[in-house]
Image (tube, rainbow, N blue to C red; front, top):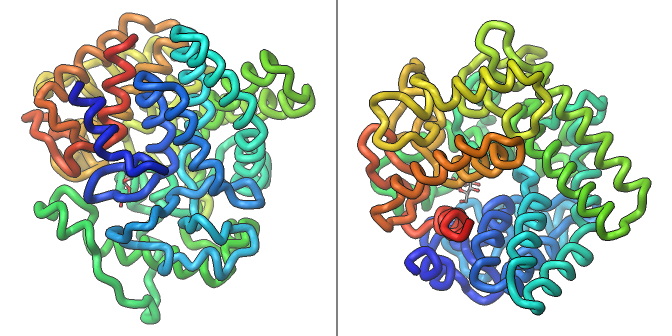
Length: 434
Ligand code: 9WN
């Protein structure tokens, strides 16, 4: 009931904001997870959340990472991006940011359909209508990623900003960000997040923020043209977790396409993208650690930093059975989710045994319930039922304080970041209704 209350109280009618104060707008991958939670309260409202997001899809196919509502309260706001003035592809309304986030949306549509089919006739009809109404937009979104973020057809999808990965300040990005040098003409700005999260150690640093804002300046200068962004942006990294999500989401979308009679040529595209990305994720694995790796396209080098993203092959499959079993054991073993110092056996974003582990700092160590759900969903899909159950019960334990926090301190279980974070409540609702 409390999880449902979080979603209802964050619902401003047109959208469920990602969080009540810190994130008072709609975020792309949050909206997908939120819609899964909403499906348990009513399939129609779940579909509406995705429709709000898809209504902001750019003409070229990109789904933007933020869709702004009419309240301010977040920096950077639409004025800082200037997408409506600068890009012919961006919508004039609603206003949006100029980058994207991980493509989890087809996963959400698939899950909503499953929930809908267990409900009333109206729920079932609403779930099926959602598939029919969203399929083409999601196909265009996947086509945009394949075309503009993997122009050489490697299978690894690139991000041009840490925000695009959803794991903004992960240590994965430290080296690529060290090559992002803000110019003296970076317009001044005031962070609002630091007013709302008082403990600075829980948020990215000011040095990191300067780089985040500088990348926006670089993109403004090429009017968000996706070809030029790829060519000129000083941050360009092939993201192995985004690629794995892209692969499995393409599988889900292709299966829905077959079932709902969508054009065979488009379904074939999705299957080809899925196969290519799955193979590329598997091929990225480090011979030493077995973990998948990002590739810094600007530096031309693999990023050998050990983080939770290294388990990307468990999201999309594609390893041989022995390698997959070994990776599962590592994820649930004593270096990661089974680390003896953790309060709950939920994967931390960085292992406590890593030099870069920071127990309170955002994507540098804390446990994120939504990421745990994603691994749990993938475990169930790929036949690892016991591990899926463990993630569910351990994450429910972690969030048992009812704060529905954005992230948790792994060694103490302390709630960190925003409270009443929508996607945390949403995945808990889904898990309670399994
Ligand atoms: C920047 C909304 C978003 C999530 C991201 C998370 C955080 C924003 C921020 O909040 O990012 O996009 O201001 O820190 O890192 O994954 O989508 O919940």
